[in-house]
Length: 113
Length: 112
Image 1: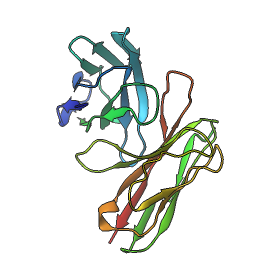
Image 2 (image 1 turned 135 degrees about the horizontal axis):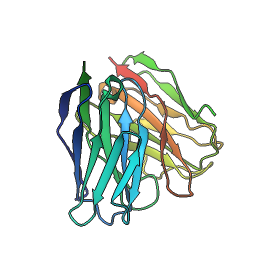
Image 3 (image 1 turned 180 degrees about the vertical axis):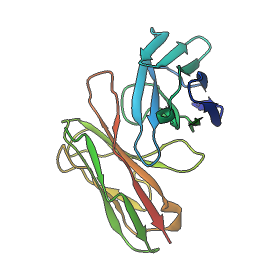
């Protein structure tokens, strides 16, 4: 069964600290893995997209890693800011097309001053 | 570019009423999709269209959709039920890789 699991469900960190969010998947065959940031009341916004051959990709203070062998990905946030407070969603695609995306339930991150 | 726009932002319906959620994109994307987002659950695909004039053949009960042109992809609730209370997200993406999806801001719909 194709599934995407994220952990933790929620996380509270102090401003300026680093954190790592996890994503494990069983989707097969694998095409790509995406991390999205969703602010409250807004639609998800793409942070990174990684294909099978990529094991790390950065977008500013966000760094995503991918281990296709163990089917695990992580999103590392460096020097967190209050604006990082959001839900982070991991999405795995099994092939091209709109009906082959599998969504995790997200990690709710709260950054406090 | 405005990207993907959705209207209305919020709406309350009574059971049995119908309404249309609007979605438009100005990026000339072929694919457009509708998702619903419920607490504690990942986004769930409702409909997708690969191009103007096409829609997914499997149509969930209670919904209707049309794709008359590239830009617009309205979702119609035929006879609303409380189970359709959700946040509805519209998305679009290009057929050329990396198939990054662009989401609209969502419509929060409550059916009483």
